[in-house]
Length: 138
Image (cartoon, rainbow, N blue to C red):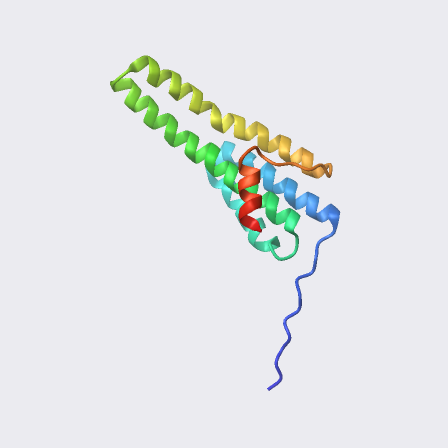
């Protein structure tokens, strides 16, 4: 039997890499209609491109983490703080609920901004999340 030599992954062009990175960030828009399914898109893009483009992999993972933090984390914290605050200290609970309720909106706006930046070939990192992802991908 002859052994098949695995072929190296085909690298992507710069334009294609920018396009897939943009799609990763803009997948945040899917959350408007499905609440949390927008996280699936950057995760799929990450696994499809992780060996072909470090640029695409970085932006896909960065988008995934940001969406999890903003949508899932913000949603959970909002509900918990509103529930606790509503029963214990209503004013503080209401204020915390409103502040954390802004997280998904901020994530949505920042995701759109990130998609536009990478599509134009500009460097883009979410504060804290970008550095965290970059350090863990090395």
